[in-house]
Image 1: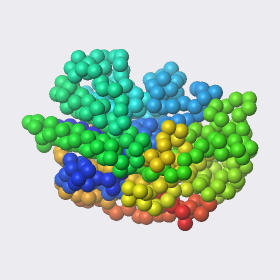
Image 2 (image 1 turned 135 degrees about the vertical axis):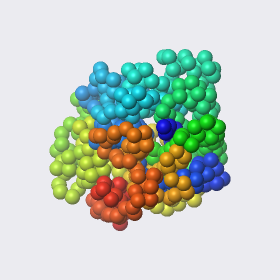
Image 3 (image 1 turned 180 degrees about the vertical axis):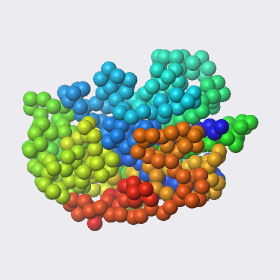
Length: 473
């Protein structure tokens, strides 16, 4: 029976994969199936992407709509930060998870199959990737874990977890050891996911091709090489598939600004939590969410943003909040949900090369990311493009598939090769990875957006819509 090891390199752009920087990934891509048209979801943020991956549904289905968001029913006076387990659990309102769709582990468990997670990312992201671990008696470990059975297991087997660093190489290496030396040989999961926090951490803090970023990328690739070496040494190696993915890409941040401050200076009573003196709540991001006390403020905010050269088009949970044609519905991107912001702002990016020679720059709103750091979350094509490689087991050899794909299609593919149903998932199995007849070049579409922008997109053979990138007309 097929087993699957998934390895996620957080934030890796596909145009940064080459024989020098990422030799192990480059070799796997050449030997397996590489999906040339793989994309993230919107917003292209990690704690939106991780639930999309693990549930096979876009944000409108699972309900995790941003890394940082406002929910008056949970915390009326502040923003919720989903990197924190306590905020994720607050959103669950006493339940196991705020996600409104079943996870991969929950789908496997009734068939007697086991899922394990090893994460070098945030504790909140780990909880979203494997929310039912405690109930199912399954393995979930994150580098921030101190308490619990998994943390105790890892300490006993491998010692203390290294401190966080930039680049985060010690923790990436340690997470690789946890998977290879402990989880795979002792827990023998049918599906394992290793989440590596690099190159994302170094992209944010040093730029896309800074020297320490290059070191971090090589370190993450080296962990992948060790995973492959472990696989190849197993007696059932031919039945173990490796899937390598990234959750989003990056652009270089140019023109850092605070949207909340911009709105305050324009006369709006904007803040980070609703109060007697606040009418507009703003969550900082590459695509900031805007929650309104009074929907009647929407046209005024739209008018203000339309005059700003750094602003892109608006998206709306309910487009009727503005006059026809002034906002793109979030539902078109699969991102409309009751938790979604009333309005989502975008920034006007550029296709021009940055100082590293990589295409893509954009303004951004992120207090802890420096000017010139990597950024993601918006609709720039370099933010939406992702790595997706499937190698070994039943997957085709030496193929570049044209079939469109996003994060929601990966778990349905895993379930397909395990012989399990994927009922209720929005994604579908990527058959191009399994046989030639499953591949098809997507139709290209362009959606005109307000303010002189356009959204390029693909339409799959089944009619599914895949955003590719926003550009200025």
